[in-house]
Length: 107
Figure 1 (cartoon, rainbow, N blue to C red):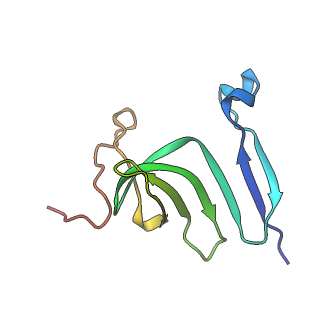
Figure 2: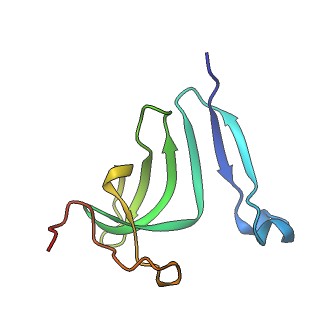
């Protein structure tokens, strides 16, 4: 039986100065259901229900989609979306300018 782990990213206040500059410290815990990663800082995403911040990433294994736990900006609702349902928001610095939600009409 393959062992899974739970990963937790320490908040910036608990990291050393060198860790705050680049390296992220992760703690692993056994979990029978897969891997959960706390995103620090949260990642802004476009979802079918609107824009929001992803706080947790869940990976159930190689034959499953990643699942993103997202808190929506509009109403604060918490939803879990499969990987094909989400898109990264605009980031001009890296040249990503389209932030249309998945499933929206293509024009």
